[in-house]
Image 1 (cartoon, rainbow, N blue to C red):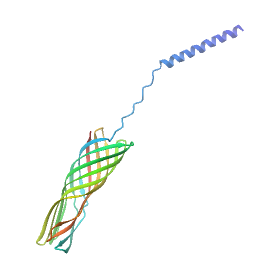
Image 2: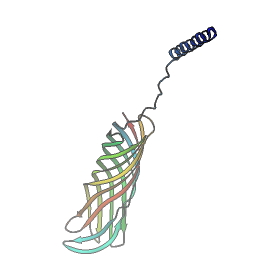
Image 3: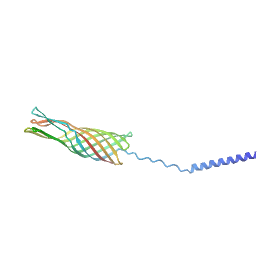
Image 4: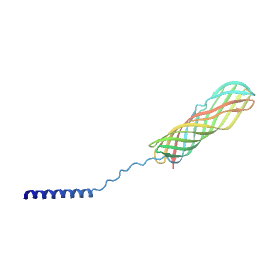
Length: 230
């Protein structure tokens, strides 16, 4: 009986000591540091930037009229050339990957073409244009895929000649544009984009009563751009 009581006391003491030691360990163990997560890029904010590209693919069928009489179709103007300028805009990101914004841009350009076939000649040149466009896109990490479209305006020089008659038309045109692009953020402030635009200034009569033509002024543009986000 004494041996049993002695063993019981010994076991009780060992268990108590073990529990106390475990409690000391749980108290003295320092808490783990919180896991830091990388900051998520936000597209919200104002930005300014520059762009450069190439315009191509105009399709203007040149047919002359004189005092109501149709003289015939004499050729085609397919304007192409370089362009470059600047843009400014604002983006707002929400829900949480969608981005909406508004952008305005202005480019100098040399989108031109000409022909002459002996009795008739024509030439056209878009020497500057700009757009004002809403944008909507989806952000995947630091990359934004977007569509855009809106108002376009530009300055067009158009000349035509048939025999001894001729005209020189110089006007600012209004039209529309639509396009899409991809933009990537390399840092919190610097982004770069690749963008396609189709710009259409519509059809209008150029020249006068003696000689005139129905001009169709449109083109496609591929542009690269660099933006600084504030």
